Length: 360
Image (tube, rainbow, N blue to C red; front, side):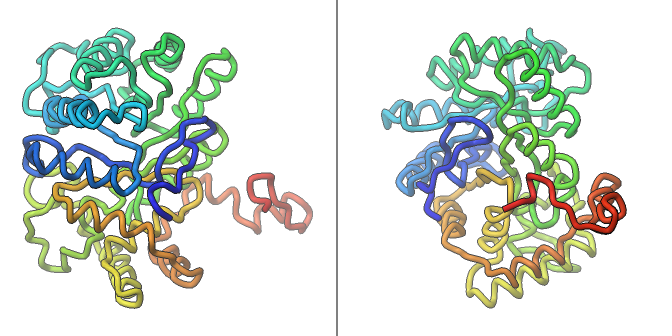
């Protein structure tokens, strides 16, 4: 599965690579890469056939967007690339950005129309382009009416300032309602969901995956290596490291629990069988999951990028997938319990009946 094994994102005509280059590491910061290394990562990704670049207005206080914009302009690659960026976080309160315009202004964050237009204009300027291919709502703000968000983003699609939009880190009901409103009002709707998803973070399968399927939205996992946990660099009883899970970080110590260590043991065993790094096997599992269109990968060095890309060459057989699926199976929530085979047989008089989405 090379990076040029393109697929459409959700129920749309947007053609993307199976691995998207996340650029949160571009620019200053604890896990950042300087301009020269960031350019080398960008160039290596393109050379491998990748076409999907993902950034955000708050990454490195806007410097990530500025670097990506320069790299695209210098390589004359705008028409070749799918460029994605994000809005919603107020940079003055975000741990991901040191400084940003609008400090202390509540209207410099969220998903209201005022901030969407402000954020988009600023991103376009930093990126040096007049349109964004995929504009993400970075996070649900919990207050802006869905109707306002769908209308504003749909109007921006119609105006040509963005081509498509997607939703990141939101409740499943919110995503489904947005897709439904867009369909009923005959306005452009979301084409993708960006969610934390990995062997140790599968809870979104219960609600978000079915919502995405029904709403025509592709799934784009972020942190498929669980902040580095699935690389195998950490060990039970010894979690000291200079990686993303050490010191202040968005995950804290939430990954260091017994269940995750057990999953990691199975992952490492399969990695030994394949003679490949654990991180590559974890990425291969994510890429093989139904509903996943493109997976975000990040790197602060070219060697990390190359290792991640190598995961596209791995084929996990049915037995290996089953072992990983079983070890990492999430607790069945209420919705999942309703679809158990025995429940369906009770409904249909003892017969096994499959729905359209389950049929070959």
